[in-house]
Length: 427
Image 1 (cartoon, rainbow, N blue to C red):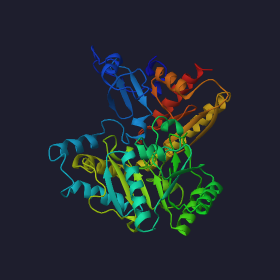
Image 2: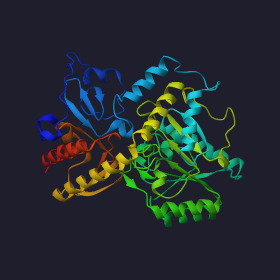
Image 3: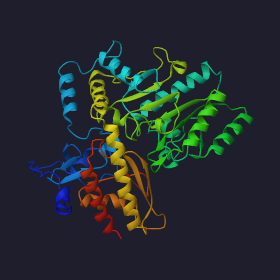
Image 4: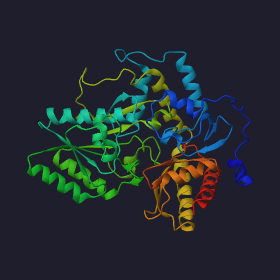
């Protein structure tokens, strides 16, 4: 059933007039050639505009996935189109052996709009977290004189899929079959300050020293779980007292997703190191590791990225950042986030036998299903697709809502109505 057939007239999306592809590249043909590392939903998307996307059959969907919190400005935003077109005709890639003006301008914007004093550019969130881990280890060896540094990370965290970052990720399901894992990581419960203090004390008693604590301000893949303010503020105090680096993974929550430019602004603290990716490029691959000057111990040749900070990615990312300011998108994120959570809480009351909790910040929100019901997050996502709404799971029992930051009030209402009708089919 198409969205246009289910939504009341005042929330109808613009009529799709795209030509339907007569010979699409089908999922069956796709699977002949692409290694199967994703559990894909059976739709083939071919174009997008704003908060909407269309498949090869001409069906229209509201996109509340946004490339998993990545398409900051939605699809085909004129500012991104113009920035890409201009830069690709000028210079799209050169080596970091030379100075790249676009990289310098983006770094300047990020430093001026954060607590950081320096930036390293790469291509993804996992790479940004790898850079943060390497920087913390070098700092531990060269400044703290720690021979075998330990980094504490949280249960249910997610930091990437490289070997070091899946080790940092406190979820065994991502680590299975990839042992031996990288040494030097220990895990603690999220939002549990006593557990942090006990872990540090236990390691100290065994002559092992904690060099850094790596946390997400809000756990995304771990179920959309916001950080507790008192927890993070106490961790900041502990790090200050003991000379431990505080690293925040802002890959999913940074660049305005929470209603603040950075997730840490919701917690009243500043990290020593933090990472960004996803929304930074609005869908163009880019990652960044940002740090304060006192822990910036990298020297030439110690870390690098062939594509990191190339002119094309940086020119587009800078334009995304500028649009956040020019269009006052943080205010929109806060308003639409409140509207979305209010609507989801209304659905939770209506379907109280199915929905356990609504939580989130800004435009990263989660709807947790009750543990004792058979319905899963994937079931809800599949049902929503039939009503023209794209959502994404965050674990087996949590549905995540991460629309573009340009989403309108009418589009939020439209999504809520589609979701209500989808859930009704499962009850």
